[in-house]
Image 1 (spheres, rainbow, N blue to C red):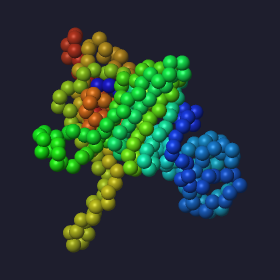
Image 2 (image 1 turned 180 degrees about the vertical axis):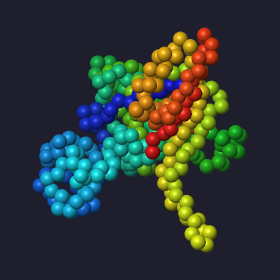
Image 3 (image 1 turned 30 degrees about the vertical axis):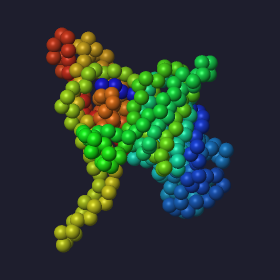
Image 4 (image 1 turned 135 degrees about the vertical axis):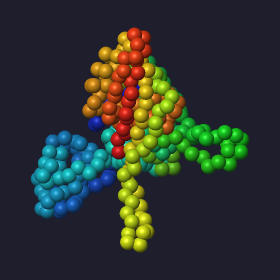
Length: 303
């Protein structure tokens, strides 16, 4: 079991992107907004206290001079802008761009891992460039899934499906390097891009339970006809992890520190269906013997 603890990607870290920020009207301190009107804040030049790269909805008529980033009585946050959705914690909100999504990030901390969650892509290329040593990593990943392909007939005639997540844990551990990504598809989409360091918790065991919690609404009228309104869903994983008894204290501290922080959970390398970006709901460590112990984890993804 590996986890990737994400670094914050904001204005300073996102050094390049081909996704334009033209979602809504830019807020300015002198403009008047009607109730339910939308705006975005991408700069401090117009009077906002911070360039939040968020979209806001007005909660009042004749709304003028009220900073959306600080005044929750006059403004409600709706979402990140399209450019920054992939760096927010709302997995179902995808950054969308025709042809490809290209972006570059620079993180001052040492990072060695990346994860792409809820992606629609044919390929993803990741390049790491150091200011002194040049390109130190360049890999292109094909997201065509071979899950369920058991014979040649299935290979040639089953519909092509693609993995919706990708984790990379072999990036060269550099600080301050430029990490560039190219997500390629007719309509490229990415729900979450996580950059950080991975940590090992132990060895995942067979018997893991994979499921979802569906927030779709099903209603039945007086004639028994069912109407389904599709909603979002989250992934859940229940899994046991075996660890060295000497590591119990360290693992307990790591999990305790993560109780309010979403991370990428990687139960098994190469099995994207297991990957979840979210929190653990509960963990239970049982010290089985002087050598090995067991940790049960209930993991719940983000919407």
